[in-house]
Image (tube, rainbow, N blue to C red; front, top):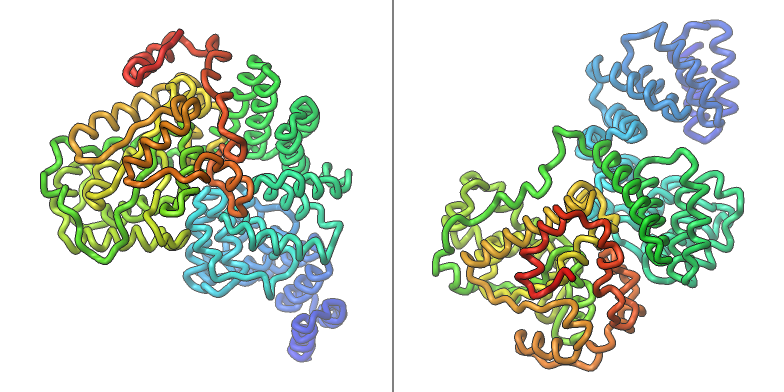
Length: 607
């Protein structure tokens, strides 16, 4: 009789009838109060009705009665997650694993608990194992995608989501997918899904706020403002950080930085995740900067970088964190062999043009100009070369500490395979019918790899006053993988600048490369002449559209993958030249001494 009641209740659950299932389980438990399967099914029925605490209490009792059942611990862990008690959930899933349970349900639950506890590296590992066991499970793929997003592994996130569509997902899953699509750069898919969600529920303010954030990121300010105008005031209580961030960005960009500050301050007075606090403080600094309040801007930056560093430590513990600038240890000790100059004869497209420079040197401005040329196609800050390099470094005989030998002993087949891997990664983002311009500023620190794989590549190196570079990098929210530690202060940013440029200049003497050097200031102040010289270097002529490339940038539907996405839709101007002088009082003597040799070398001044 008990089994019959249990089977009938399970059938009701599968039909979406939790009330009927609960009634049957109450009947069963009246006659057998310690029946563990009955307690579990009743708990599932109560959870489906939103009574998470009741479900948890039932499962606590079941676990006490049958502590050797891993299934009970998994169900209890899921109930704890519903009750927003990730620590208890973490403990429950650990008990299940200790009993030998390695099912997808257990691994998924453990990963979700770790996500909620902000143990993101650990969450990634559990969820990767779950996805390997059940790659078609949408809930597993969404959770794994969230871990990748938290770790800012956005290219992997894009690949994770490639086979996942919005159909068949419930509303909560669709909201999660839309947000992950936005972070992965699948903007049109994210926009469409947000529109669908808001069409079904106009009061879905979480989706509306995130839609506005995406629209601002795509430089669609009017559309973003329209969405913000439809957000209910009560939404500010639910997601104060995200709402304040997008409101402030739109207001600042519309010339209302003072009002933007008024939107930011209430949110900053609340308890917020440190990653969001960092974003808000960076935005606050931009607002103060635009108002000429340098002291307030620097104070906000100090808070922003402190929060960013804390978020970095949460996501990448010390034992998992890469050394700051550690990859610069990979360098040639001797001049490259003459054989490296021999063109690679294969079916690949022409070797790319690599557009590089220290971050915030103006590479995005130049990229927009090059992208406006009909015989050039731009890959916008995608780590295609890094993917090929990783393939090389995974080889059995590779040694980072002996880059000379590792590169020199590559076989023709290995070079061909690495080139093919590069182009496959490029084609994930763009199918260039013409010559590719690969814009990734710090590819300049991969000069030996490029020389070995692409001997006919051209280089465009953009320089800018070192003090302006340093200030601008310090003021940007680059994220964990782009400067959370290296740009934490003006002094550390100056040391980073000096290390990168010294590496480039030293390696440049040892590696064959065709390099055209130009300065941001010269480009801005004499655009026609500088552009003509650059295009001549590439054996192309200047096209009129290149001189007004901001118009194409403003009309662009794809996002611009750089912190300067808002600036490149404006006409070329000299506003950013010598900006550092406003902040000269904050450049210590040590900072200026670090930069002085580079200021002199590249023809700038400190007065």
